[in-house]
Length: 244
Picture 1 (cartoon, rainbow, N blue to C red):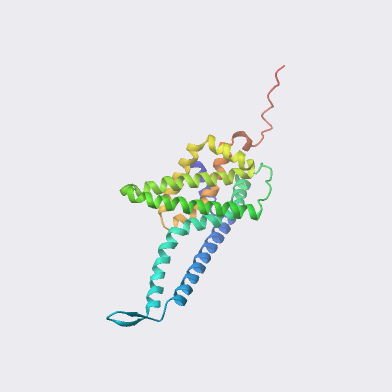
Picture 2: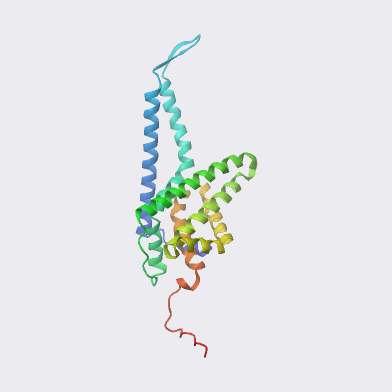
């Protein structure tokens, strides 16, 4: 498991990894800026220039105050949304990450059919929706967790990261049903790997690498758990003799 992560980490300088990372970050930042711009326009268009306050009189500058407050609000919101949105956009390019891993570490494998844009977008949006929903539930549970809040965060996101990234990596070779069956057989190990991957999500800046490293790590894990189907054929090993 740790070797899967180390192999993914050593491949970070790969140009294809850098391309996916930069595209994911650029799209994430562009989306957050666009959302904030729309939010700001809505505030400025819906807020009156002055507000009549009893015993005080007309008060102006409310739109400016709300605009400044919206900056702080969006900064906090972006901290919460940055990783899920980056995960969604990285999912668009998961096939590129997995292919880069296989080209370097498993060059003997046959090519896989190219994932359609529709399927890639659908899986990424589904992952994003589940990530947001479950983290929202985790935030509610965190109210009662006290000092165990980080553990709740890691456990929940570990389950999600392991489930989704392993499934997406395995589907390329086994299809959706085959990926689910393999994931069910190794549920505990996959969850543990996701849990360990979720811990760096608490570290700013480092957490932006997790979608990329997660895709690469779980590609390695899939091939390891899939057994001899992922191993090269060695001509020095004669085929087993058939029983008479």
